[in-house]
Length: 115
Length: 109
Image (cartoon, rainbow over all chains, first blue to last red; front, top):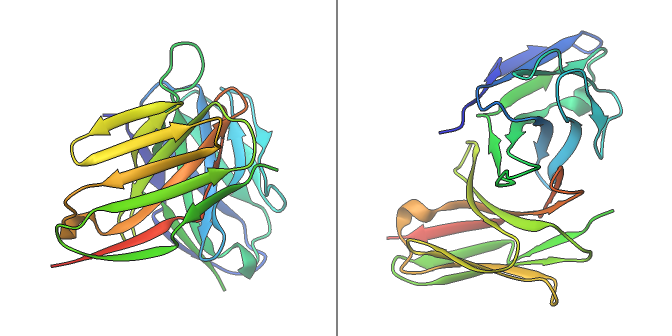
């Protein structure tokens, strides 16, 4: 079974502080994704990556940076956290391209509260 | 951008009843993916269905590209089926997904 692990699972930050959410996958998937989930907005794509060294803007990238230092790791960085970034964040890896199934595998989620 | 509409937004069933969840999309796609999300939990992939019909136990997914719709049928519902069902339009050669708003299903004993 594909495995995606997020850390931390819960985080309380102060406005203006820096927050880093980490994601590790053991699936050897090229693609990785960061989504946020909010009531009334569903799941929205923040950043994604095609592989090590690659980061691409999703649908709501403002206020977020991403880093993909290796095939296994993909981080989401909030340089100056704001209360509007309070949300649940999900990382996913994707078996896309070539003979891939196209399926996405999600982590357990990271609940971020910005006070 | 890509548009995905799910219906109904919520559904309450008695155990044993069937459910039909709908997903309509406004543009071309590579595939449709259905997920189950347990309350407060992560997403689990149910189907990756580019077209046609797929079965898995009591679940059936049907995607009709020409009609720009996909459905998820749950037969003989159980209380453990309760949760949120999400469809996602897969596009950009499979690299991106856009999610619908979800259907919150409650199955009562």
